[in-house]
Image (cartoon, helix red, strand yellow):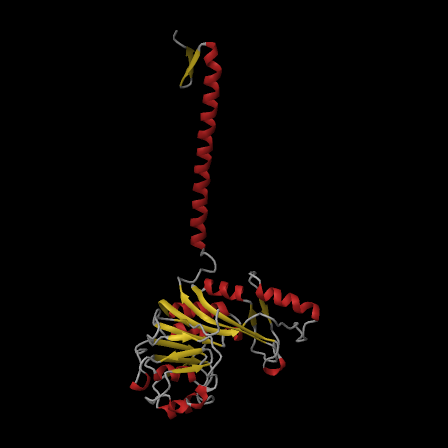
Length: 327
């Protein structure tokens, strides 16, 4: 994919949120956080990996109005405030106290109406009704969770049909650590790269400090992330992987970002007891039907064989009786 290609959520120039795949304007949003609500902003503002495109430019708020957006792990809230500035109805969530982060300070500066809910991602279904959001931002979160699939299922339930989940996080591409935190040997590095590129769904799990951070738990490869999404009723429709040999804090960078669309309902973990009883009964009926079919087949075979044996003797079979055939 060309570095200038963007994977859009809607038609071009419709005010939709876009997944940016260029490398420019990374620091732009930091310079203009305080005045994002003014009408003379640039028509495009890069916020990490997400770009909000304005169709109205200097003429005011764009056509993104009335899009309902949920942000998970908002922290200081730059994504939420930028989307609100362009007309979206935004709900921001995090487990952190907004007075301890910069969220409430920025909200006062911007005179923002973004609602902040302090809640775990696992419990968002208790605070918001099902199928209530067009977009969900799930950026830099899933690898910090002990139960990422459970979180994805909870978010999938909140998406409208055809709604989209923007995700970003750590992905197994070119780096891994041993359980004790030591770097891999040179023989292991090739295997790590192979696992990262393979179609086998693999995820590393750390109970210690992966990359010196004790909140990093899972590092899935792309195939594993796709399976997680499918389990939650989501389908990845576009993605980008970024890998460098040198990154932040002396560790290589390996990140994935993309868009997943709601494609169905989450798969059940295991059938309930009554479902097992129904399943066993159905299996019993199928087995009995198969036995009846086999018995009918054997009867037909025996009947034909007996008829062939009786014919040369001038005999014939009528039901269970054998009589002399008429001349």
